[in-house]
Structures are given as structure tokens and as C-alpha cells.
Length: 343
Ligand code: KG4
Ligand code: ZN
Image (cartoon, rainbow, N blue to C red; front, side, top):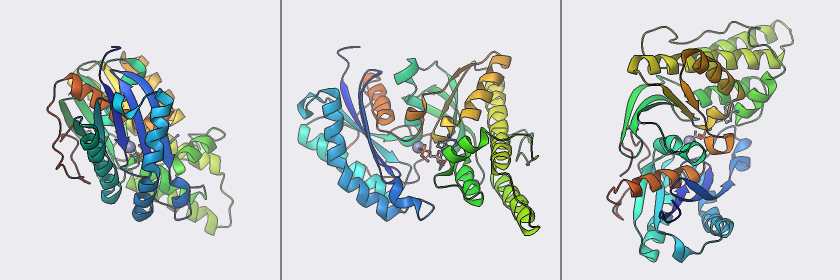
């Protein structure tokens, strides 16, 4: 794959300005500037702050990626960019920059779907995706089960959350427990010294026969449980609550993912998105996949959370599949459906 085109990927859908450079499925550079610290005190990402931060970080982050790969602009063969879904203003900065680079360098542009990119990134670590595979995509904005016949061409939605995304539930419960934003990694850490069976929190939609999820009832149950103890003057043991909440989330996620594998007769499961960095999710998924004879693929945590390498990885697949490049007129589409792999 040494002479596969060099693809530079740009990710700006939320608070991370991510730039990746790949050739084929080989990762050459992955640089990130995050505005998370600027949002933390608000307890959530502030869109205007994120957009301005992308604008400031774009050029230095691209230059850092080129330096990391030992390349110059003139070496790049194609630009890929997250065109959606995500925060409209944040996406716009990436899409505008990508168009400018493509036009200025005279190279093709590929507008890609952020969620499909979360699936494609695993190939940088574990090689080509089995066709088909089932993908469980769990992030701050999305929780979906997908049937993926070919990530460059065809992604089919099997189910998704009917309310909160899994990562959103982690972030909201962390807040209830007085942990910092974004809560996922803090709950993960706190849970290591707690018991997942300390409190029997509800598992939404667990056995409803669908491949959809619901986390809003669980989030409310945790908040009520904590409130009730605190108003009775009791002290809560944060690690136990964190571990029990986390267990409820990963129990449902892994159970439904394996139901999807069984239902569609697929022997390969991929987990992607920020929540895939969760240590308990990774462990339980491995345990249940082993028991079911399903092969599990999960990218390393740094490739699970938002980054530019995932966009470059999907761009590289599109180039290899001979997909027609995007027009320089493509919009940023904040609500792009998962079935639209590229625009
Ligand atoms: O994919 P991502 O970086 O951004 C979106 O596209 O949303 O996902 C961010 C989400 C946040 O909700 C964050 O709390 C969660 O992923 N997250 C985790 C962990 N690391 C990040 N959730 C649980 N455990 C983790 N270790
Ligand atoms: Zn994401």
C-alpha cells in the first residue's frame, strides 16, 4: 500500500480540531487541538466557543500533522472532511478549510459522515473491515447499531437511541455525582473502585425485541436515587453509583449488539465512538463476544474519541473505491443521516 494516495482528513464536528494523514490504512499523522477546557466550566460544549477555537487551531494543527508525517502540502493527494452530523458552526469551519485546501492544492475533496468515519478508523489498527460487520457506535451525540456491508458505500441503521446518547448519559450522571465534564472518563475511573452490582439501576428497552436504546430513564433513576439519599442526610459512595450506572449502560449495549449479530448472522462486531474508550464496555463486550463466538474489534481509546485520522481513513476508502469526489459546493449538514456515507 506504499503508493496509495496520501489523504489528509479534517474533523471539526464538535470541540476537537482533528487532522489525520493516512495512506491506504497506514496512519502517518494524527494531531488534535481540543477546546474542551474552555467548555468544562459550562458543563457542556458551547457551539460558538468551539467554532472560534476551530478557526484558531486549524492552520497550526494541519501544519503539525504535516510535520509529524514528514510531508509537505504538495505531497497530499486528497482532502477528506467531516461534512456532518455535528454542530453546524463547527462543521462549517472544517468544511470551508477543506474546500480551500482542495482548491488551492488542486486535489479532490471528499465530504464524509462523522459516524461512518468512527467505524472506518478501526482499519488503521486492525486492517480491512470484514464485509459485512455489525458496528455499535456510541458517542456523546449518538448511540446506534449498524449493519455495515461496506463502510465506503453502504451503512444500514438497525437501531438507535430514542432519547439520550450513551455518552450524554455518562456526562449527565457525572454531573449528578459531582464529577467533571466530560463525565465518561471520570465515571470509568471512579467505577474501578466501586461495585457494579451495588445498586440495581433499570436497563431501558433491554428485552423489548428492538435494537433501539433508551438511557433517559436510567439517568433520571440515578438522579432520583442520589437525591433521595442526600435529602435523607446519607452520604453516597460515588464509586458504587458510578459502577452500577456504568454496568446498566454496558449491559444493554453489549446485549443488543450481540442480538444484532445473531439476528443478521454476522460474526464480527466493531465498537466505535467516544464511549468505546470505556474500560468496562471493552471488557464485557469481549466476554460476551467470546461466549457467542463473535470476533470483536475495538480501536485503541485515542482512535475512539473524535480525531482526524478517522476522517482520513474513510476518505482513503472512498478514493480506493473510486467514489466520485465531492463538489466544492457541499454544505455542512448538522443532521446528516448515518445512511449517507459521503456527499
Ligand atoms: O466520539 P466522541 O469523542 O464525540 C462525539 O462525537 O460525541 O464522544 C464523546 C463522548 C463523551 O460523552 C464522553 O463522556 C464519552 O464519549 N467518553 C466516555 C469515555 N471516554 C469518552 N464514556 C465512557 N467511558 C469513557 N472512558
Ligand atoms: Zn464522534
